[in-house]
Picture 1 (cartoon, rainbow, N blue to C red):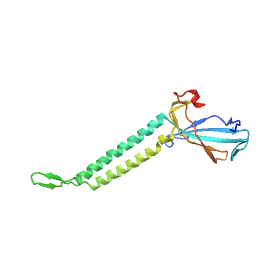
Picture 2: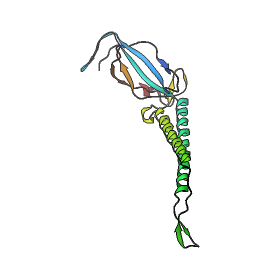
Picture 3: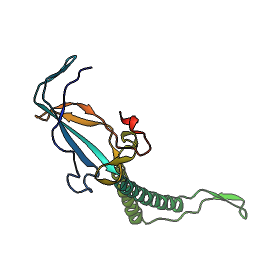
Length: 190
């Protein structure tokens, strides 16, 4: 193992970076400074280098809001889809057996083409909103377990992989972290 001192490059910073409607996650940033050169295999970090680590986190209330937005959009799409199916069944119902005439009959009504087009447009718009709402939700497999971070009262999920960048903004690698879990012994983190 290579052991070299590392210094904090400043305090942790957690911010939303704008309206949560546009970016539902919060940015987690901090920096590490290397006062001495660090070498391991084919990697060298020069003395005085500062690495900037960025990640994303979601609070439980934001996850709940994003899920509710998706469920609402999905419900709207399902309702409009059912209405479209009803219109199809009105215009082209299956044949039914007529006992009196002793034959199969097909009784159909016509659907106003304008109503059909409006309903179809509404359905496609609802499906697009459903897709957008789903894309705003994080992939559950990319999130840590729910835990706590200092200064945040709500439960926190951290996206498993963050970016490590140098002073010039070039990506140097990835990092991961996990919030503090109440049911884990202190030895779990050592």
